[in-house]
Structure formats: structure tokens, C-alpha cells
Length: 275
Length: 295
Image (tube, rainbow over all chains, first blue to last red; front, side, top):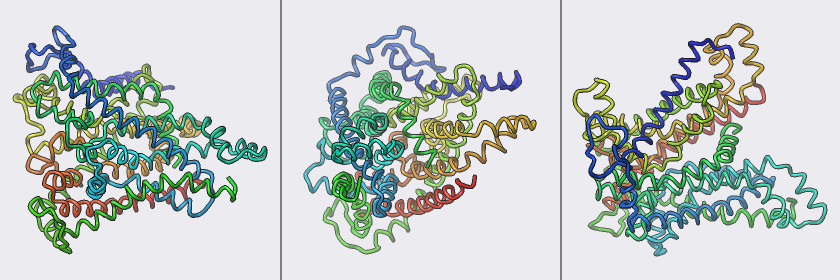
């Protein structure tokens, strides 16, 4: 590195500016969530409350919020498990079978990940209505599994293509059945890909809004994003509570992401960069 | 897997293919069918009307507004997000102190749920309590607070800004991975030839990652065109339709007014746009795939 000193200074200044651009809204969200309801807002705004308190969190963690939280956990959890299992099965076939029709079908999977959700939602809604599934967990889980499967298959297939086939061939020569090879050799080796895919599905489903807004109609079935959106009308002025709720909604995904980031980033960029 | 394991191949594929067929491909066709029927709140029984809904939609003033908004929105977000993502990737690839921490922190907006992002920024933009106005006033740029989301002059720019804030980390991630694949010896050779940082960027880095830029650009075009949550929570398409784009219009018409036929017609138009974008994507991918062995 032979950049001159002044270039370095500019670069460091830019890096600090970048961090501020990204972090200031987060800082503000946390600051307001800790502001006591009695402390007035001031213009220009005070950046940090005088007496930080957790009272907003206590108030915001009301029974409805807990219901939304449980609903989100059920719907996202089930979607993650089902998508990863079905996706891994399909990805294995897509990565190992050498048939023209398989290549064509994979093209169909890639195409499906680009479908606009808003353009399919009306027939989707009518199907759910006909099956009497509106306002149930099942309707959301079906929707989430369907819309996340294409990317999941694509990520997992990219991962499986990089695994050496020689292990599977050796096991086949030893007389292991294809199903056993899959369960005992492929699945354990696929773990990093499975983790990356699970993180992807979690991030997408935890924040999904359009299907949840269209398919659920009662407070008992709302998920967190829809519930949070409802709060705007109800508690519009009480920004402290709104921000405390926002922090609580975001924490689980942010925590999971930071623990498992390296898997996710590797899984995502491998496919995107190498095509 | 050998030929006699064919049953296993299809058994593994069956659940995924069934789900995609029934819940993604069939609804795409269903939207086209739906667009030829008229439904309204008063007469909820669908009635075949041929091209009537298309005529109605195409002749409405709203349609041209929505097309125009979608163009501004999509191009604005995609161009800004890719530019910012690219320059951030270059900056965070210089080996500066604290780089690792910043790289991780920059990803935060990408993980922040869309509805949370929108609520947070609604608050940031608030005329009375928001930080954006506070900053501008403190810097002496403004005397009075502006209602960013409530004025049709500024609403679109304000919404685009939020989408870029949330979206650029994703572009950065892709560009950073691409930059790390740039041949180091080529960079060193250019440096020995006396090329400055800017020259190296233009002569070595840009050609090396051109394919990634193209593919990423088209991919973000498709994703941005389909965006719903942030726009809906920030403005619901308002004020005076200033931020209405295809997805928000479809939702409002379909689930706000239960005019499924009209919503589906908007859906068909967005499928057509998507088809064009996908065609571009395929062409770009083909072109880059053909170029790769030569490079």
C-alpha cells in the first residue's frame, strides 16, 4: 500500500462518514426507545435522552405484541424447516442428474424467483379462500415456502455442485443405496449451505409483509410486520413505544445474522459472483 | 446417481416442482385470466368482460402516473444503490484500520426488516420530531421544517433515499466479493507501470468485474420494480399518487377496494415489464458467460 498520507486521511474520513450514514438511524431508534414518555421532544433534537429508561419496552411488550411475536416465530420457523428440507432434496437432484429436462426445469426455478409477489397474490388469495385457509398459519407457511424455495434451491444447488462427487461414487461402489448416500454423506457435508439457506429464509420470512397483510384479518393471526404497521395508527404519536417495538422485532434477525454471517455471505456471493 | 436411480431424482424433485407449479406458475396464469373479469365490491361475482378492464385502466390518468413513478423509482433506486454499493466496496477494500468492523456494521440496514425500516424513516422524516429536519436546521440549511413525505414534490425522493439506504449493503456485498477476485498480479503490474489509484480502477478493476456489475444491475432492477413494503408503510402511494408504483397500486385496488379484475390488469402489465427485464437478464448472462473463457 503506497497511498499518500492525504489520501489515507480522506479514505478514513469517508469511512467514518459511511458509518455515520448507516448507523445514525439505528442510534436514533435506540435513543428514542430509551426516552422517558415525560421527556419532551426538542427541535433541534437531543441525541441521547437525559434519563434513559426501559419503560417503553415494558409498555410495548403488551399481550398483542407477544401474540404477534409467537405467530412470527411459528410461521418463520416452519417455513425455514420446510423450505430447507424440500430445497435440499430438489437441489440434490438438480446438482447430480444430467438430463436435459432437469436443466430446463432448473431454468424454471430460476425464473420463478423473479416473479413479482404482487402479480400472483390475487389468484393465490382466491386459492386460499377456496381452501378455507385464509387467516391461518398454513396459508402463510404455504406462501412463504413457495416464494423462498426458488432461491433456496439455487443457493443449495450451487453449494452441492462444489462438493466432490468421489465420496458418493465410492459409497455407491461399496453398495450403499442412493438414499443412504444422500442421508449419510451429502446431508452432513451440506451443513454450511443449509445454514446459509436457513438464514436467508429467516430474513425474508421474518419481514414478509404483503402476504401477511393480505391473508390475515384478525389480531390473533397477525405477524410482527403487520402488527407493527397497525401500531402506527394506534400509537402514532407514542414514538418511544413504536421504536421499542421496532428494536424488539429486529433483534432476533440481527442476532442470527451476525452469528451466522460468514455462512450467509459465502453462500450468497458464491452464486452471484460466479454466475 | 445412475440411470436406475431415476425414481429418486423425481421423488426428490416432486414436492418442490409441485409447490412452484401450483403456487407460483399457476397464479401467474391466473392473474392473466382474472384481468378479463370484472369484480367490484357491489357485484362480487366475477363477470367476463373481455378487454374492458384494460381499456378502463389504459385510459385512466392514474395509469400513466404509475408507469412514470415506476420508472423514476426503479431507475433512481437501482442507479444510486449500485453506485453507492460499488464505491463503498472499493472504500472497504483498501485495508483501512477498522475495516472489518465497518464491513459488518454496514450490513445492518440489509437485515433490518422492511416495515421497521419504513417506520424508523417515517419518524426520521417527521416534520416536528424527526432527525432529518433537525440536522438540516442545525446545519443552517433550512429555517423551517419540511414535510418530506407529505409533499408530492419530495415524497418520491424521500422514499428512494430510504430504499437506497436499505439496499446498498447488498450491492456492496456482491461488489466486495468481486473485487476480492480481481487478479492481484495485474494490479501490481499496473502499479509498476505508474498507474494511479483511479487509473487502476478504470483500466484493471472495472473490466475485470464488468460482468458482475451488469448482472447485479439487472437483478436489482427486477427486485426494485417488485418492491412493496417500504413504499406502502412510508406513504401508501401518496400524496396524490406521487409514490404509487405497480405493487402498491395492485394491493390497494385488490385488497383495499376488492376490484380484483383491475388489480390483476395492473398485475399483467407488471408481468410484461418483468418479462422484458428477464429477457435482458438472460441476454446479459449469456453474453457474460460466453466472454468468460476468453478473458
